[in-house]
Each structure stands twice: as structure tokens, then as C-alpha cells.
Length: 594
Image (cartoon, rainbow, N blue to C red; front, top):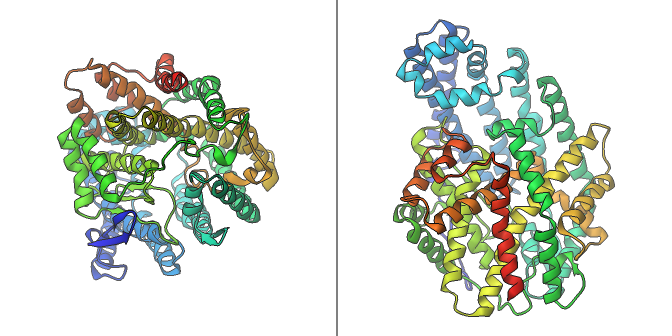
């Protein structure tokens, strides 16, 4: 077992990736890639240009072969990505990751024709093919593939864009990741990584928070021209792609891939923006009052409350807290979660070069997911663990759908993670008997929810403005910073004070680079879970835990309306989002009374 000991945190695990492959130079990895390449070429020879003539049974078998090839290359790519994330600054890991990306892209060019030809099938012909059980099994996957049918280009263009991806978007993504991993931030007598300096922004010592913020702003400002170049290039590339594919607006691709209608996203954004006043503006004014000031400096936004004792959790305490909350809701859910701890599927220590933040990587259903967190013992780290474990449990349960149908759209992918956080928070709150501790916990939860809902919708607004402005020409670092300051001021409210250093904080947000317009999925998930948890807490749905696990098992086979129907919820209803926001407003009401 790979374990990392730190005196005040206990024994913190590092993941063991050998369930995927023993090492980058392992013969099994090479043989899998060679075999996948050979099978992909045979697949192309067998089916290219022939789908319309297949029987339904043979069509289903073809999809099964495509799924098998996909799983082989996903497995190899997952291994490379996880190895790279563990030490982004290691040149060998970077070269291995890039090399694997290129090989997988080369293999997948031989299967690219398949989805393109599926989208050229007439609706009537596809309906005939789906009469066969072998093809009907994949009906939900075919539904999602054909969503992009109106935006598909010629086979030659699609193949060229596919092959160019490794030296286009993927290369710019890698440049961003490696640049962020190499950056170091001097604070007093320490030289910190981005994860460490961001952690200091919630330290109990105000002087440390300020020093961290100023260092972060200075270093990001020095590197802003590079980050602006990356951002401008990717935004322009997206504009060109959107134009060729006839997407009506920059957000359209993301909404389609999330299987959510434009009007549903617009309703969410409008609801959150309309609630900035009773949410963030009101809370931060309240927090400023607790600090005895009229305005908070931005580095105090996530500061612990003045009477917070800054409780530290060991890894073992964090694990037991999260699993205990899961167990109280569903022993089955806790049993799945426990496997991550028992089998070293989690990489938890902070290390130089390690990818900052946290994620859950599903890898492939025939193996298992892996989690990455940067655990430093804070209450927020316990919440992050609960969040990522929710993703992991979801990915394990959905794995039964197979590689093509296990993945959920981003909007629903955040459901299990945020629900896991809520279970953990409620369990921790119920154990607290001290009024002071309950107030501190409630305030911390409100701040997390504001970061998830208000901040992410502000990010979405920032991206929307940026992509709109980019269509009129390249933006300077100062121009991007001006857009950032506009949305931050509007969303966080007059109780927060910003300086020039904060103007460059947009540079470290990876979602802007890796997944444009991803960010609203967090707000979608949080508001959805607030509504879902309200139903659970009221006991209005018999057998709620079992229905909830069935929802997770469905993977990507169902849309949000079908998933929420058993709980009496409908995200298409304009009142749905306000119902979720009212949970946060209720918490702030409670804090004001305290």
C-alpha cells in the first residue's frame, strides 16, 4: 500500500494505479494498444460504409465491438492521465501522457466513421434496426449520439479535426496544466504550490490570508500574458468550430452534451442572478458584521469566523465521518464507498507538482474509479472528500451500464457528489451540541454553497462575456481582468473589497480551459440536490434511498426529467430552481437569528 504520513493528519493514502497497468513501460499496456489498433482497423474494414445494410442484430453486435475498442483505449488513456495528474511537473509523465494521447487518437481515427455513419441513418431505418434486442440495448447511447446530428461535418473534416486535437486543444490544455504546476508562490519564508497558497486563503491568521492573496495575485499577474494567450486561442478555436457546426451560441455544445435544454439552463442562471441579493450580498454583509467591519477584503471571503477554533481532522477521522454519514443513509452506498479506502483508490497528500484541486476519474467499468484530493485536514477537506466519494460511488454503480452508457452528463454527474456532501454536513451538524460550533458549521456550509451556486454562475457569466468579446477580437490580459472584476463585483456584492491583484484570479480556474461552460453544472447539481434532499428529509417518498441508488445505477441512460420523476421533481419547472435556492436562503435566515 502507498501511504504518506504527516504528523497532524495521520496516515494519508496515495493511490495504487496497478489495477490499470503496472508501469508506463509494462508489456501489458503495449500489447493492449497493439491489439486495440489491430481490432480498430479490422472494425473499419468490416463496417465502414456498410451500416445501412446491416441487420438489427449485426448492428447491435457492431456497437458492442465499438464499445470494446473504446474501453481498451479509455483504459490506457485513463492510466496516462492519472499518472500525469500525480506529478504534472514531471517531464517524463508529460511525455508519456502526450505520447499516449497521440497513440489513442491514431487508433480511434479508425473507428471515427462509426458515429458519423450512425448519424446519417434515416430515422425510419434506425427504428427498424432498433427492433433487434442487440441494438435496442444501446438505444439511449444512440439517442445521445444523434443529438449532434445537425452539427456534424463531412467525414474528412471530422477526421482531420479529430487528428488535430492533440496539437490543438489538448496541447493548450497541457500547457496550462504544466504552467500552473510549475508556478511557485512566496509567502513569508515559504515557497508554496498553488494548492498550498489557496489553502492559506482560508487560514485563521488574517495576516497569512493577506500574504497568500497578494503573492497569488503577483505571480498570476506575471503569468497573465501566457494565460491570456491560452484563453484567447481556445476561445477563437471554439468560435471557429461553432461556426462550422452551426451552433447558435457558444454554450450550445455544452448544453447538448449535458442533455439539458437551453431554456432550463437559462432559467437556472436567471434564478441565481435574481437571488444574488438575498444570497451572497446578504451573507457577506453579515460576515463583515461578524468581523467588525463595513467591508471584507477579498482574502477574508473564505476566512474562518473570528471564534472558529480551526478544528483539524486526521485522515482517519475524515474517512469515518464521511462513511458514517453514508452508512446512515444507505449501508449499500457506504459499502461501495469503503472500497475506495480499503483498496487505495484515493490519492490524498499534497505534493509539489501534483494537480491542484480534486476530481474523481471513472477510468473504465471493468476496473474502478480513482479519486484525487489535496487533503490538509480542514472541515472543507472533509466536505471535498465526501463530494469526490459521491462521484466515485456514482461511477461504480453506473459501471453496470457499460463504457458507452455509464457516463452521465455533467449536470447530473454533480448530483451524487453534492448529495454526499449534504449527508456528511447534516451528520456533522446533528452531532454538534455547542451553539457556537453549530453556527460556525452552518456558516461554513453556506459559504460552500455560495461557492458552488453563486460563484459558479458568476464564472458562467464571465465565460459568456469573454466568448462574446473574443468574437470582436483578441482580448488583452487587462481586458479579461475587467470582465472578471465586473462579474465578481456584481455577484459577491458591495460587502467585499477587491484590489488590483484580484483582477488576475481568473487565470487559475482550470474549467475555463478544459471544459468551457462546464461550471453551471455545479450550480445545477447543488440546486437539484437541495430540492432532492428536501424531499428525503420530509419523508414524502417511500423507499427513497433505494430509488436514489437506482437513479445512480442508470448512468447516462435517462434524462433529468425521467430521473427526477420518481421524486416528484421537474427541473423544467421555473419554480424548481427557486426551491433549491430557498434552502440556502433559509440557512442564512437561521444565521441571522443566531
